[in-house]
Length: 310
Ligand code: NDP
Ligand code: OXD
Image 1 (spheres, protein in one colour):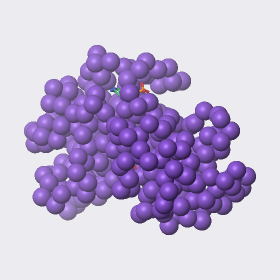
Image 2: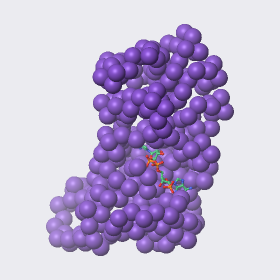
Image 3: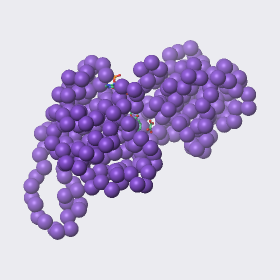
Image 4: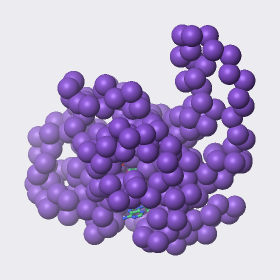
């Protein structure tokens, strides 16, 4: 067996160039990993990231699967030339990073850390924050990342309410679905975390009406995707203080343009799409396992449902 694997993500190749061949060989898979597929009809697997210039998958007639280095696949899932199975990235490094970002930023707002970090008047205000058990966190999106974040917050005693497209039973966590579920969760929450994929259904999910359902003074954390939130509606809700703070990691346009209102809004924290990163050591193992499965005729891990869009 000798496979050709086309690594179509030039900007990250350096991190994988030695690792992938080593792990493939350890898995007993004889393979050539190339960054330039001179003859696309010889390619068995494509490893892809949104930075890849590749848009036309038609010439890759032998390709058995496209393996995304990213968890979010909105930039490839609708590509009509892609007829092969598409697998997204689910990896422990990505999940751990997201848990740390979400827990860290939740604790910042829960504990009111800014009051003490930025205190030029040296005011002595001994008001204690409530306990985590007295705070409700809404986790919009209870997939690989949302569930891990919800569990980590619940382990700190936060009162976590999950919301997803389909009904779920996750041990110890309350999970809602549907529009009525969304309204109930948003009305209850002190902190709302959006960990949904960008699809036609989730675009502008947090619009003016739904932001209006939120508790006065609630906080939003968005590490999902920029278009989940109607930016104008959010800015209006921040201006009135109805939403007391938004910590945003993802945006409609990235890098966030210099003149964007989010940069200068006193109630917004911008982080530059760093909530969670695909770490090569873990991610390469996931890629190799999927190649092994493809060769063994076993079902791929983390298959994207093209109709659902995630
Ligand atoms: P998953 O596919 O595992 O989970 C997606 C969740 O969203 C599921 O619970 C799903 O519901 C829910 N969902 C999807 N559509 C809807 C809808 N219309 N209404 C309600 N719920 C919906 O994804 P991950 O958890 O792995 O990742 C989530 C997103 O996080 C990614 O798509 C990406 O955009 C973002 N991300 C951001 C990173 C960053 O650094 N900022 C890093 C990695 C990912 P159900 O369970 O019912 O299917
Ligand atoms: C991803 C991301 O989707 O980094 O993996 O946003």
